[in-house]
Image 1 (tube, rainbow, N blue to C red):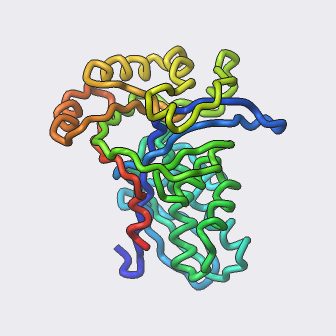
Image 2 (cartoon, one colour):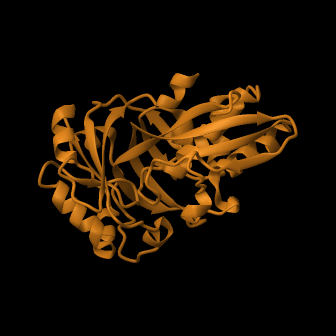
Length: 286
């Protein structure tokens, strides 16, 4: 490792429920959801440059996001770093190396989390002094989920996902399964039968169990591996879909039970055990 390289976590999130309550005039969907972080993370490594260049480097195995079909123009880490430079006029640059551990297209917010960690880390490393609120505003230009990762707390979210209120929730152990497929968020949002008029609910309504994920039946129908994973995990607990991706999860009160279930996850699915966190591990760096 380069001795000047600094490593920062980019944690996954789970959507504990997800409702669509309407659409804005510009076509964006209005949502209600609750985000909780887990201690399953991508890791970003930053090496500062004096020449102003922003580059992505291969990971320790020689891989980049390009190998996963993500070009430089779509790479949210590069876009976040360049947006921060353009906004502040910073003359420094950075090399970014990403250890990608979160499933792509899984609904765990990996790309958004990578972008948020880039904003938070470079604001610190470049000495820019932007407020958290300013970084959240910048993050919204990159994606609707980026602000909650900058916010760094378990949150109740509304609007397109940017109107946030803190929540204190139990922090269970989760089994997360990534089936052998990727779900296209853009495709799922356009499905005609998607429920787009959920009644607005309160936090108390969510806490009493009157909430679900309106994308789950749509994803079940179009992605059979996700349906099979939901059915399999449902044999051990209440299985839910996270966000608009392929990953499914269930909560357990103790780590031993979660690990016992995870050991049974059939191939070719990936299984993970992760702890729910009301405070993002990103902010332990600060």
